[in-house]
Image (cartoon, rainbow, N blue to C red; front, side):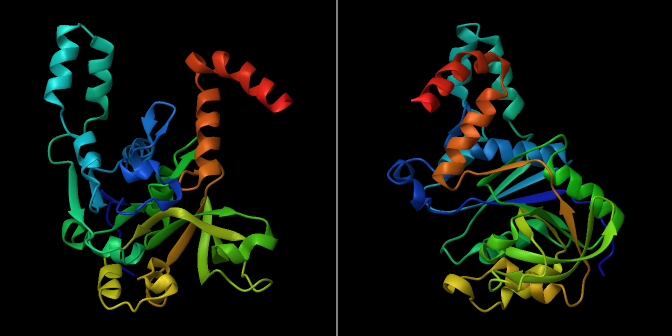
Length: 293
């Protein structure tokens, strides 16, 4: 097992086309669609920052330049806000701006899958453990999902995957892990199966889109053959890494919204609006009225 080192860097694969949200995503990257008043990617970045991440690495594609612009200074906008004494708005913009040198952007020139997207970040990550956060998944709990994973990593070392429980009858739809001995708020992973045949899953714990991986994964992904969907699958690479390194599963017990799907995106907007004191009063009544119709 690799020496335990601090997790400082996080990779955000944001090169996806977002075809499930066409025509909106013809002009707006799916990661920039808003949940209440923040783009989806901001929620995921906030989760990473809460966990102590120091370097944000975005793997982008064509048409995703607006993501880079979002995490940069907008001089004309800020000047206008100053002239209009919009102090609160200026503070808001300053709060979301990464420090100089804290964000890096690299391109995935072809849509070859999640494993390939992660591999594209290899030179920026270097020889150290790193996190991967799927930008479609917004998570909410008493403690951020990645923060809990980092805490488990500090106990277990190796690699850590965030997992959640699903109904056993739908386990065949997910990447499922096998459950070993208990470790902190999780367990040792002793098996990993991508979409197991019905009735054959080793458990009902599925991988939910958050990873802490050792850098040895890059060497595996470099020669990884294409798998499901004719893409380079991260799960296939992790299966190979599992043969030589330890994996642990962090059990996330909060709420997860898949904002890559229309129903998950709508539910996220409703849930986050209802959790806001400044909005709940004006939306709760109309929502109840809509449901009563």
